[in-house]
Length: 73
Image (tube, rainbow, N blue to C red):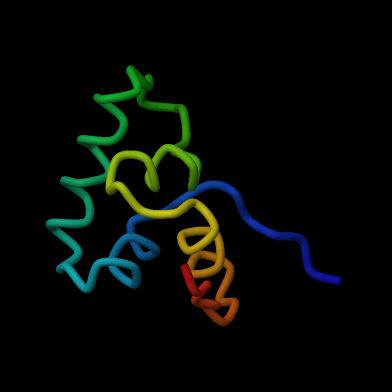
């Protein structure tokens, strides 16, 4: 079984938001600033989900190319 990623890249933000590569890089920078990350530190899917006000499960599914399952409320 392939291991699952927990760190986010700008291409993941592009897939998640539909934004351009430039806007995705800016968003990644904003998340890093929000969580006081140093340049060498990575952004987790939980941090991105909190920043974008999304469910962490959805972000995890998108970055790992899993089918997004909608839960009924």
